Length: 243
Length: 315
Image 1 (tube, rainbow over the protein chains, first blue to last red):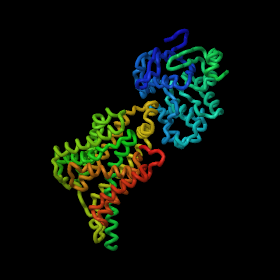
Image 2: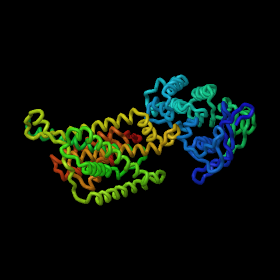
Image 3: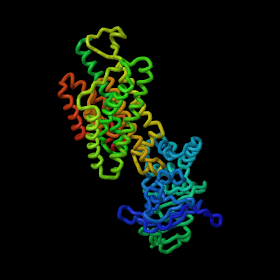
Image 4: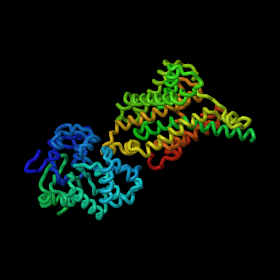
């Protein structure tokens, strides 16, 4: 699907997801164009992580469609989506605590068999995050929070995804590390990876993103260019903490 | 060498032989627990299955005994492979039929199912092979190593080619499994899935397939132990998996359930306890000692010797 030379990579239409009887996503529609950074902002429980989990196939929508490259993916299990080019750095990092940093990264490339490319990407991750290189023989669980976040992002990159889903990469990190993570997110994007970014830190997210969606109780209440959202009065009040 | 010392050395040796086959069974307990947190009480019965199915193959092929030449070098390893494939396959089937439908049920449900599966298998074995003690012919050549090969003249110590065979099979299998889980991509994926199933699926690991692989490997090792037991002890019956299973389970808990090296370590400790108990306290007391160890352990250090005290180390 191409309009004006812009390729639509991901499109959700009227997606409904449930946790048991809890209606977590109540008809989400959004899209991500190739090459963009798009952010989902919103309060705790607004459905941001659920949206990510539904896209990546950890959960499946009860209603609605999810298209990736023009193909429906909403019934495909998570482990198969990785091979199609979608990888994620999940909320809470979820690295493998009792595998070494190196093995964690190797697991990120689980679906690939191009040894040379994997080695190349390992070097690329070590260039992005030199700290991981220093600690490559350490168990993942012994890393600090920030290092674990780097590892979670690095692990996702090892799949060489075309679409990278980042869920709360700044959560629990010191401000200086948050800066580093967001700079890295931009660098990853500049190398051609499309990014869907979920963040509670709305200011930082809108600074790096091209477009944004504001979620409230499982629905999209606002969508616009990131620059416009930053100027939006409601966004400034509710999510950027201005009075 | 004094008689007492020889007796002691012999018991240490016996303990190690018990530990060797228990270790193979304990590995299956610990691997399955590591990945789906299920104590697969039917696991011991895979050991009995390995015993019966290999005996059936030996009988069907009409192999003369003792094994020698071609039969020893080619046919025996082939029977090992077939026994392990069938035992592994049966374990995968058991998981598919009995445990997989309960994967998201409360933990007690698959646990009770595992006990039921164990009863069912034991009943099937009784129908298949009868309820009495079964003779497993002495296929493996038994040569007295110390006297006939080395020309020594100990009063009591008795070590034969069967002992060599037992260690020659079990130790490489244990080392091989450890290397497989530590070093290979599939082994790392098994550990990853054991640590965080959802995160494993996020990196592209098909967790269902990994669980099936785990059941396969565990079943194959238990089947191999059954074959080793048959050729070593030359006797068994339909309930043999029950007791061996309980001891192997104790070994796995002793070492730290979910921990592969722990299972092997625990098995050798249990083996030594049993051999020493048999000799110095009396055979009737050995089980009491072993299960007292299990109870004390569960009370005072449920994470076992190598398990971490904070979170249980898996696979």
